[in-house]
Image 1: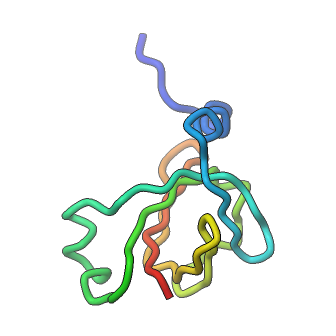
Image 2: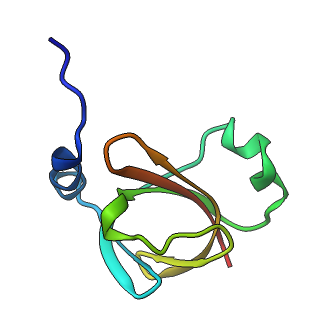
Image 3: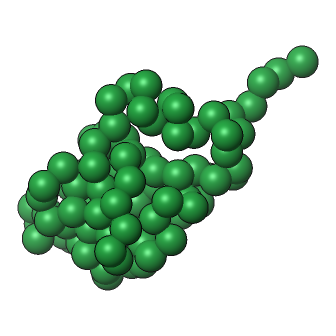
Length: 98
């Protein structure tokens, strides 16, 4: 039987990979930083200048993530260009350096 990544798996997974601190709307949690893939750079984010990145985080730990809002990832300020939830409590945000 297949095993799926569930909400209870997400935080240990992030912490085990050495997550980075993310602060948004007064809340701070660990998440994962990744570079955007080519598909993400084809959308609206292609018009954004500056460093782009993707962060993955447990949805419940950062409820204040909104498009256009501010987010600090590992000490660097970003603007949220896109935010979406993926299944069982995992979310991702495409961010651009301010």
